[in-house]
Amino acid sequence: MNGKRIFFARTIYAIQWFYLAPLLPSIIEKYSLPLSFAGLVPLSFFIGSGSMQLPSAFVASKIGLRRSLFSGLLIMSLSPLLVYFSGSFLQLLLSYMLAGVGASLFFSSGGGLLVLLNKDRPSTALGIYNSLFSLGGLLGLNWILLERYLGFISFALISLMTLFSSVLCYLDKSDLKPNWNVVRDKRIFYLGLSTAGVWGVYYVIGELFPTFSLYYLHISLVSSSEFTGLLLLSSMLGGSLGFLGDKVGKLRLFLISSILGTVPSLLLYTQAFLPAIFIVGIFNELAISVLYSLTTSIAKEGSSIGLAEVNTIDILLGMSLQPIGSFSGYFIWIVNLLIAMALTSFLFKLRLRI
Image (tube, rainbow, N blue to C red; front, side, top):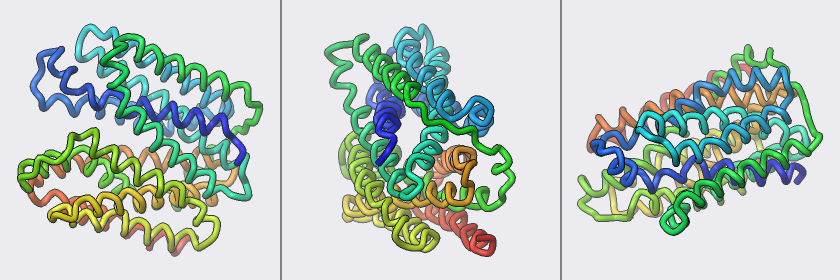
C-alpha cells in the first residue's frame, strides 16, 4: 500500500471526532447547562464537516489535493487549543465546528490521493483508510485517561500530533487537481442517498443505545464510550475486509453489506444486542468502504469530488436519524431501519445507470 503518511494522518484525524465524547458530562457541568445540551457538541462538528464537504472539494479542485489535506489538518490542529481555552459554551461549539471544517478539507482529498497512489487496489486502500479511522476513534474515546492526569497538555498533544501529520502530508509530492464536473454525475448522488441511512444507523446505535437499554431493557449496560468502542472495534474488522471490493462485484457486495449493516439492529430489542452490534459494526463499515470504492470507480480523476458529495449526503441526511430516533422512543430501531431501507432502495435506481 502506498500513501502511508495519509494513513497515519487519518488515524490522528479520527481522534478529533471522538476525544470530547467522554468529556461531555464535565463540559455540561462546567458551563452549568441542562444535560439535553450535550448533543450539541458532536452536532457542531457534524455541521462543520457536512456543510463544508463540497465547498472544500471545490477548493481542492483549484489548489490540488495535497494542499487541501494539508490545510485541513492545519485547521484541525488549532481546534483542541481553542476548545480548551473556550470561555463559553458557544465558543466551545464554534471551536469544535472548526475541527469539522478542517476535517472536510482532509477527508476527500486524502481518499482521492490514496486512489491515485493505489490504482490497482482502490477498495483495499479505502478499506484500510476506514479501519484506521476506527483505530483513531478508539484512541479518541480513551483520550480522557490522559486528560485526567495531564489537563492542558493532553489537548496540546492532539494539536501537535495533527500539526505533525499535516507537515508529513505536505512533504509528500503526490498531487492532483480533481475534475469538478464530476459533481454533476447523478450516479454519485444516488450512491450517497442509498447509504445515508446505513451511515445514520451506525451513529444512532453508538450514541443512543446505552440510554435505550437503561430505559426500555432495564439493563445498566456500559457507558456510551465503552459501547461506541465495541462498535469501532468491529468496524476495524469491517474496514479491513475492504479488499473484497477488488475481488467481487461491488454493487452486490454493497447491497449485502448495507442490509447486514442495518437489519441486525432489530436485535437490540433482545438480549442478543452484543452479537447484533458486532455484526452491524463489521458490515456497516464494509458497506461504507465499498461505497467509497464505487464512488471513485465512477468519478475517476474526480474521485475526491465524488467522495465529498457522498459524504455530504451521508452526514447531513444521516445525522437526521438521531432526532427522529429520539422522538420514536421504544420504536427507534424499527423507524430507523425503515428509513435506512427506504434510502438503500435508491441503489436499484443506480443499477440502471451503471
